[in-house]
Length: 128
Image (tube, rainbow, N blue to C red):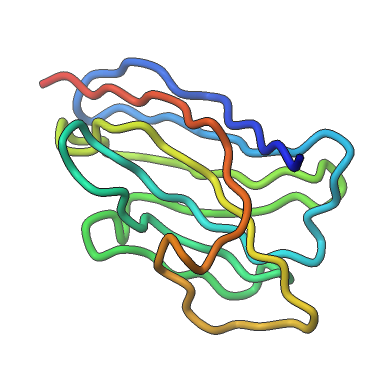
């Protein structure tokens, strides 16, 4: 079973920063578009952002645009979510997700059903 592993969550004050990382021991991400989602208590899981296989195309939810940045390091087989200017409403469990693609695909993939493999999530708490 594919296991994605997120790390880097924690508690910060509003205005602070965190960087989340996602990797999969024994698995190569090079043929996958990767996404980040989050889920707050009592709410549905929502799209945060995504990055194409090449890393050249990214998409972001309007609520995080300009504050969050997704990147990937192929040598380290890791995808990152840099979160700056954090707000209390960013508090949630953050998940990384993988969408295998046969060919390079730069289209927007922003729904849970677009992705086939998920991590266990990492908690991010932002206090005011």
